[in-house]
Image 1 (spheres, helix red, strand yellow):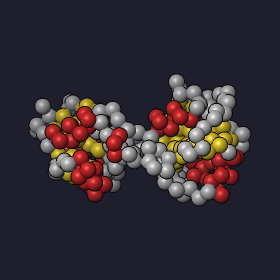
Image 2 (cartoon, rainbow, N blue to C red):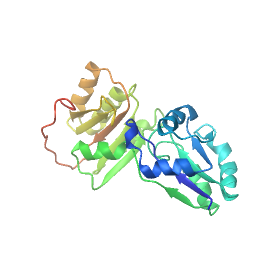
Image 3 (cartoon, helix red, strand yellow):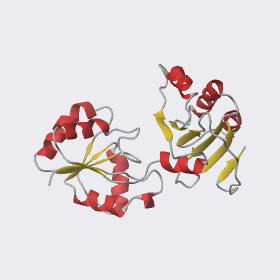
Image 4 (tube, rainbow, N blue to C red):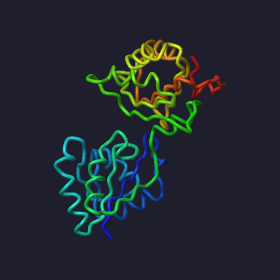
Length: 239
């Protein structure tokens, strides 16, 4: 039966892909990939040969109708991003919405995403949280950070290594330098690291230790109470 499958892929450690995801990638008629070069590395690792087409933020508006029509005609398609779950700070939403509106079945597989592991290991309350993805780079950035200052839930952000220090400084200015934060770097990868402390301390740490890799910033909510816990020296950094 024709269907769109949303298939999460590993965010670093290739062993994090599920057996169900592998079976799905093997069974579909073709794969839509954010970057076919990146996905080809994963498929080669899994021993899968499958036709792929590019589907990314620069062409998705032009291709969603064609793809949905192809699925409606009886084909099964898997959508993957370079890493993690499509639609979460990655292309995917437009295609899913188009398929839903066209009455096409969409099935989303559970799997890797950076925000949940980072949130859980932050040590902050995770029963209720606010996921912001990437903040606006310029227009609207200061306003959004100011709005988040009063957020009582734990806040999860994605950030580029080139803007980590600036982001921490802006958060400190809006929320106060003593607001607790956990900055998770290269999650699931060889050099994974969690830097814990206040926003001021985290900013100072990354001024001294140039940021490299992928970052998730987890900030305590306004009214949350926190205690620091002991952490393995090889994996955690207390500042």
